[in-house]
Image: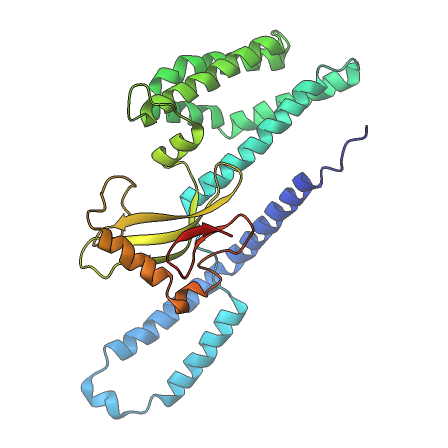
Length: 311
């Protein structure tokens, strides 16, 4: 059986190349934009510090030219997306999973009878480990484990050494696989213990993700109470982990500074708050927005009768 074209790795590489090219172009014009920013900041300062006697002097020409410049800048230099370190970490985690699958594929290649295939797999595996070493990835991972789950360090060191020995040809893939499995099992056990609320509570990775904040949640739409200070909100969200992607509702609190509080830390002491939010969410002007509830055969949504149902 022939292998598929494996088009997605190429598409991913092409997308990353395009992003890097766009970043390079942005860096090329950054000095010009910085100079323009300095000029505009000076212009704004002129009118903010204007003496009262100068108020009668017409500034129509300035306003008109500024409007033209604003429209030209917005059209030719669109704003970049609001990147965040947390988002990049999530992307890095996803691409690391892709690399892990590729490493597993190469490990199977090294088991083929063809000497050329075995040599090819070993060479490519060595390239991967050299790249990881150049990126200082093992040191980063070890520091993270030492900071958050120090009891896991012996298993990590053992697995890292055994895998390196396998790539060097002085150990078997079985030994490397066993040590990797021990590392993963140890990580799972530590996560279960941290997230467990009762000694014998049955745990799942989904539950750990929810309690430890690993689940990537995108808020599609939300409504909030009108109370002063802390506010309760009802959100329609997209849950991107674990697979498959899920959509659903959740109640959350935010403090008087607008910061979302960890789930489960603040109880809902008044049912009236929840009813108020459901009423807002089912208001015709809100509920008819496509962003509030995604239509689909397996979708849950709040309907006009103030109940949750499955279409």
